[in-house]
Length: 463
Image (tube, rainbow, N blue to C red; front, side, top):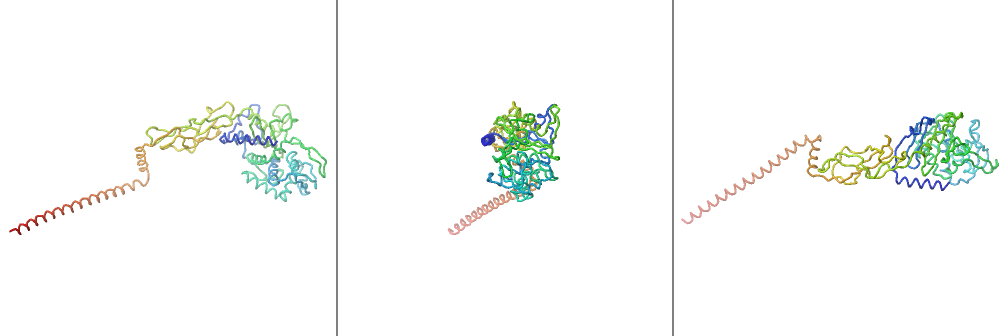
C-alpha cells in the first residue's frame, strides 16, 4: 500500500507540473444515458490528479452525511496521535452514549484494551459507532470536546458548509456537510498511510484483547468486495459508507486505473431496481460505479492548447505598422477531455484583457489570460502573450496624448489659463525686447549729441 501511495503522489506531482489547474466541468449528461441514471440526490466526481470536477450534482447542498462523518473522526485522531500502536481503554461512557440507538457497532466492551490502530479499523471498516465514541472521549476528553476539534479541523482544511454534532454520524438537525467538503476531508485523511491502508481492507482480523478472542471484521463498502459481484469494482480503493434515515445511502470512495485517479461522492441514495434483474440495488454504490466507469472509459489527458496557438486579436494604438495585436497561448495546456479531442476542439474566452493595447509591445509579453472552453465548459486557463514586437510611433503617440488630454474634465478649464499664461509670456518677452530696443536707441541718440557737442567745443577752442 505504501508503494501505491508513493506512486500516486509521484504521478500527481509529475502531472501537476504539466497541467494547468482547471475549473468545473460537468459531464453528467454524458454519464447518464437512456439506461444509466445517477439516482442519488448528490453526486460528485473529481480528478485527484489536477482537481478538476468531472461530474457535479448538488455538490454544495448541505445534507446529513451519516457515517461518512467518521472520515473526519479518523482525521482528528491521526492528527493527534503519533503512535498508533499505543493501547487505549474503551470507557463505559462511550458505550453508554450509543446505547439504544440501534446503530452499527464493532462489538467493543467497557474496559476493553485496544490499540489506536485497531480502534481506527473498528471505526472505518465495520463503521463502529462504539469506536467513534471511544476515540472521541479518548482524544477530546468528552464527546463535546472532540466534536469541537472536528469542527475546528473542518474549518482549518477549508470546509465552508460543514457542522458536526457528533463523531459517528447519527442524524441530528444541524449535523450537515456537503460533497465538496467531504472531498476535502477525505483528501486530508489520505495523506496518512494508515488511513489509506485501513479503508482499502475488505476484511481485517482484530487481534485478541482482554475482552475478545481474535475475530474478523468486514468492510461495509461493497465496491471493494470481490464477493459482491453487483457492486465490485477492482479499481476502487476505499473509503467509507454511510446510511441513516435522513442521509439515505451514502458513499465516498476513490479509484485508480492506468495512472488516472478519481474520487467520487454519492449522497442521498436509496434502494431501487435499476438493472432490471428484479433486485433493488444501493444507488450510492451504483452511481459511484457509473461515474468511475465512464471516466476511465472516456477521459484522457489531451493537449487542449498548443504553445503559440492563436487566441485572439486586440486593437493596437500608437503603432504605424500594426492595427491589431495578435495574441497567442503562452504555454501548452493538458486537460481531461473525452479522448480523441485536441487543441482543435476548444475555443477561448479572454479574461482580464483590456479592450485595446498600446505600443510598444514585446514578443512574448504577457497581456492577460484566457479561459479554455470545451463544449461550452471551462476546462482550463492559459496566459496570453503578444505574438510579435510592436514599435511605438512617436507622432501617433503624441497625437494620442493630446487626444486623451481633450477627454479629461480639466482640459477645458486649464487650456484658457495656459493660453493666457502663454500670451502673458509672449507679451512679457515682447515688452522686454521693446524696452531693450528703446534703451539702445536712446543711448545712440545721446552718443550722437555728445559727439556733436564735443566737435562744437573743439571748434570754439581753435577760434
